[in-house]
Length: 75
Image 1 (cartoon, one colour):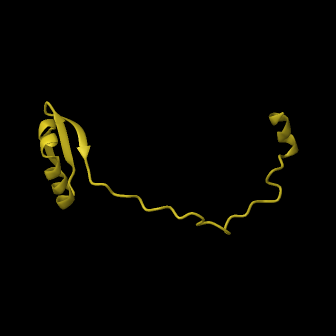
Image 2 (spheres, rainbow, N blue to C red):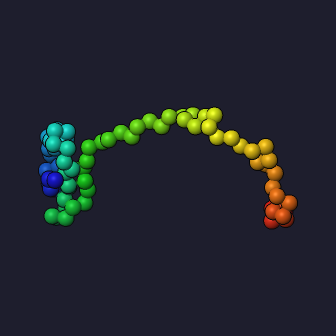
Image 3 (cartoon, rainbow, N blue to C red):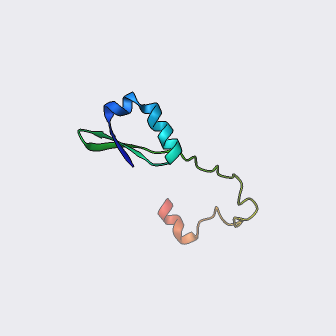
């Protein structure tokens, strides 16, 4: 983990991004010696597969019908 000040980060951003790509360690940006931000490498999330459960879930024929004792709560 590397700590740098804001001015240095603005001046040498390209250099720090290259270091990040090589060493995979976050860079902490500080203001007056206090950490305020962190730069980390981007890790894309895997794409979600649509239709993964197709054909595996069944909905009952009475799905849309409320039990008689529940009807009074929805009127």
